[in-house]
Amino acid sequence: MASEAFEDIADTFDFLEDWEERYRHVIELGRAMPELDAVFRVAANKVDGCASQVWFRPRIEGRGAEARFDFQGDSDAMIVRGLIAVLHALYSGLSVTEVGHVDAAAELRRLGLDEHLSSQRSNGVRAMVGRIRTLAAEAVAAA
Image (cartoon, rainbow, N blue to C red; front, side):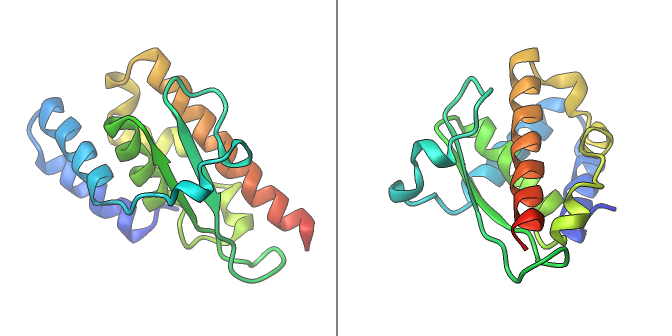
């Protein structure tokens, strides 16, 4: 159930020959992402469970189970910004209901992230995915 943007990332990863090139690509994805305005870098938007500073600002369009999910994210670490960009590609534009059905671990395995991230970074990715799922679930419940 991956988006076209995520499929583009997966295709690029297939093309890149080694993990070092893929790692650089993830960093480039993070650099291309717009910075989160400092006004949104507050405790309410902070993602707990990440070694780096991470903030997510939800942007839900519409109401109810079919509302469209989007978010802005940022981090003080470049690789984490890149991981946020990958997650944005995976989830952005889905309905808030669909967000809960994405098997993020399986999708990220397609990129080889499970093999090449430190355990601390992997825990951070799980925390970010958990936060995304919580934000989407809250949007469904608010309807």
